[in-house]
Length: 346
Image 1 (spheres, rainbow, N blue to C red):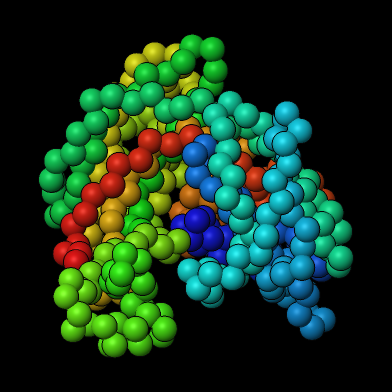
Image 2 (spheres, helix red, strand yellow):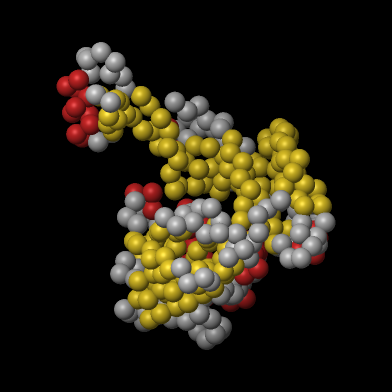
């Protein structure tokens, strides 16, 4: 989720840029307008980041702040209702948005409606449908060099369904991990990292069979990795030269169109390993099928990354989303995920 929140930070920057221009676009952020950037994925617990726009002074500058008192529900098409609660985990500290979560996991081919009510900002709604599972085969990886940059090349075949349009997005991220220390005493497990656990360990450490163990646990903190492609059929060619790196690769429905399609992309290995214990983790390779509105939103975000340095800010606009009475996106996805460990972990 943190990698989507990094997208949130960049979109906020774009909206701030636009808010400095008077009456250029009808979709400028207004004071106290809710901003949602949420991707719900089949099989993953639900996370919805929420922020709101705040006008600073009289110069038209828009800032963003967290929303900690919202009522957030997601309704499945069959009437099942999930109530999300504010998550105060340290993993989400420092984000420009509050994160509301629920343990429920979305299903493939199911439609979900989001409703967020805030006393100051009103009510927003949005709807998305989770795509069918990603059908992928012959996935393999190999080391390579691209323009002098060490990369991991991923090659695979997608088998598309003829009865539905699939919008594919390829990503690579590094998920950070944290160390967990624990021990067993009289048949029970204790957390050494908690004060009471550490105190007990000091009291019983000399007892027979008592030993301190170390494990790694994945966090909700991610680092996005740069990726490359030589596939001339991807939409990225509309955003920048294929010689450059991207945050995501976009393969449109017209390319696969109900057939088998073999493609590849390469991942910059720069952050695969580190001596910094706090930055160690695992590399996740993601092949996603996403809802059309999410595909379009993320593609415009990729295009802005290219255009922001060459196009005057007055010619940029916030990406079109599906949030009614607010800004942002509520999209659905299905994913194939492969994890790789390059860091030395305990």
